[in-house]
Length: 353
Image (cartoon, rainbow, N blue to C red):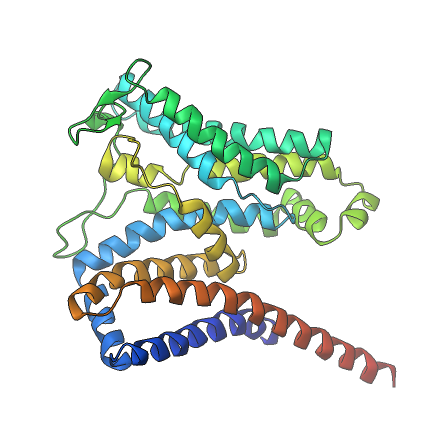
């Protein structure tokens, strides 16, 4: 029970501190914090806003889990942006140019996207285990290479076409290759069907980490590589596996928007979900349930910020809140970690007396 309270204490402190900090800023702008937060809550609880929150949270969840897999092994996969953008672009090209019978194309497209994401992350894994290159440096560089490769593929002289929005992109994905959604009561837009895949991913992530030998080895390497080696774990192999798995999950990040709403990949496709996933993984402490709450909170702040423009309050206040949450949760985790260590030391001392 105490362990669970320790896990919950840090994010709760971070959220409360961000609310207090945002309230002070709102007061500085001459706005009433209480009424502003109530307006945000009322707007976010409408059927349309709730759908938008679930859709954004689905995308954020995939990104955060991809980052969390690396964190479990002390690997910082900062290349989720490049991995999911390249994977989504390739998946969009396949879905737009290839016709599959019935709905057979959906699992094929998902597999291709995961395969491309894993392959792109695999480059960083190879550089790390063979050449000793930090995954932070290699994944950052691979982000830029991915952007350049996408730009080449999207060129009209290669595979790109002119879309209805007068921008360069991939051909419109036919109906059979799209993932159907479902509507909340009175909601004018559907919830992404890939929400169900996100839930399945969370359950699988928890099971693999906590109920399999692979998950044990993964966590063991993250806690102490030397101890893992002594117990017979191949650290280099686990590093490759972790990066491949992280990249494969990263390949899912862009699919909810691609197959559930936009149906084409253009040069304007959102490109910052990876960095948001880092913040949400930290907020959720790399736990599938914690990440889910973090993704919903982040999506809630994104959607509810839209009402601020109508009330004369700068919506950038939400960006400040999100930044404060990340900084606060890092500090709060460190504080709770030190408290936990002191509690353990006190328990050992009392047991020895």
